[in-house]
Image 1: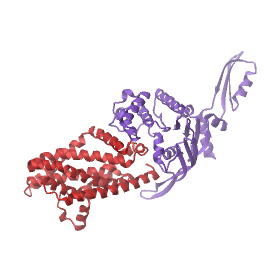
Image 2 (image 1 turned 90 degrees about the horizontal axis):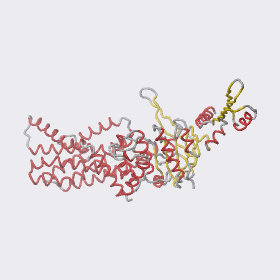
Image 3 (image 1 turned 180 degrees about the vertical axis):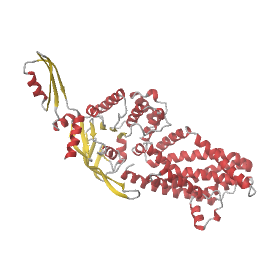
Image 4 (image 1 turned 135 degrees about the horizontal axis):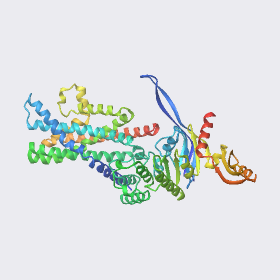
Length: 254
Length: 303
């Protein structure tokens, strides 16, 4: 059986598991409305808020939320597999563990893209009409590409998380850092230069700008290219980091 | 060619010992020191040892889940370090009998999933999963979520997973832990059947009578090395354990029980029967493997 068939098996299994836990996906659809809506209400006391500003905030919070989930995916998967006693069985199978990780990431990314679509359609239609609706569908490919570097970043961090005994605390810290460094809900130009540079290197800010640009109809090719290059770089770093992690696990024990 | 050949495996772990509130000290724990043994085809090998003796470390190295520091091991003719993928295809594994499955998937779905990870096509994996579910008397629970299963069902499902790709070698770490007597017996019968079909089995268990029933050869491991090896009966005789001979004889004042502990039960029985007394009953109690295990580990600790 080819690697593609095995990947298919992982994807099928993961989809079954996710479909039996629909609560999380429902939250992904609803939450941006509450957060962006709440922020808009608070901001309306201080400044004039229009539907375009709401749209920007809405996409910004979507990006923050999906980024956090995607960054956590690799580490959470490995941690859950280890705690559930499955990691040994997966590593003892002849299927490459990276293939299993890739399968789970595809499922997670696809689920988030689907949730994003369901969530975005009413807002995009409300703000930009039918063209917005069409562009929100084409933005899905962009989102899928944009989630890949975040997954690579997540694998990069998973080695640290697995070694750290208080992995929940560390995950909390990473979540907070990812929210702050997303640059998706505030103007990063106001930050010190070094911090602005760091945020520009991380993929969240560019994903936000690319998605918003696409929904508005002003996507520049450079942003899409940036995301594709970032996907390759961060995924390569993730694969390299995972290789080191696996060797370390084999030396020290799981 | 042996099914499994282990030559002088060594493995140490670095750990940190707490020396107070903050200070920690590096400590090295030797899990395996010069471990060697081999398993032939169609043979069940029992690895016995006290907690922390190195049994699980040995099983993990032979499963390619841990790299040895020194020494070598071959499984089905493949080196566990250099040919890990081939080794993985050759083995079925039961590590934590009640864990290691996806809670939201059914037993059938779990088996098919792992079968496909072992390279079976979807159709073959489904066919094989159904076959094993029937064989392990799990067919009624096949479509229920794993999280609803009792311990007994989980253990049997774990054994089914180890057999899903029909491997020639099977490792089982405490496979019948928590099982009721009926389920334990069915697992033992299955293992004996697998052994007879030519598969090699590596078994660790604290149920020593179970090991005695299944295994052809036993290795007693302590402090990371085999301290005694042989057939269960050979180990008992090597340790000079005594049989208990009880003869119930009829005397004018009523029946009398004579109880003698001896290393030579046949000679002792002959002597007792030759006295001419009317014998009402004879019982010969063989020393158990548990006694042998206790004696071997105690000798090693004293030595």
